[in-house]
Image (cartoon, rainbow, N blue to C red; front, side, top):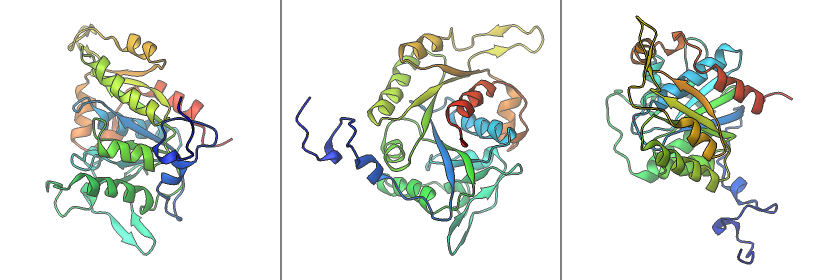
Length: 279
């Protein structure tokens, strides 16, 4: 271990006197209140990260908690569509007003600011990262118990910005049951460890398909190794979500708040027990 130079900005060590991470946090709007923040991450795209983000917010909202979603996937936003929101966000003298879903979940996404939802966001990395920070500091989040941040895949600019600029209470890693999953999960977990962020657990999406006729489970993408992977990283499996036509349809049709299933109850239990919003 090298001698301390007291320059925390370039130091990879985690010591009691370290203060730089707190100094880097973007300031929350003075009119806002957010108690716990959970980022939903994945090492690659197409694994259902936005579905998991939406379903977690819905599940905890059903339990009486005020939930919100900050859509940090600036170039591929899908959260407004999952909740059927088509109106544009408005502003006030105090900041940007998030849109609210039918059941009261607050949402902010770049698609709520575009003239047309199909318009591409052709921005460079610094502009995208700055937008994510604005969603945290300039949006008026009202009495939020649990905020979920839907992250873009990978370990690039936006994940780094979120990890450094927003006080995360933990992350959920989403993966699929494929041979490549171990390496992909490892990248996400290692990034969290580097940034001293707690890994709440893993969610395996598309884990299996249950035949509606005979009830037999089929491993469409091969046998799952998620339990062994979780154990090797010293974490746990929060949920194994099947390929379910009704769940997928609820996201596509903007009715995710109506989905029926108990797949996320265990994950919600962990969040309630470990990230309590009241003492």
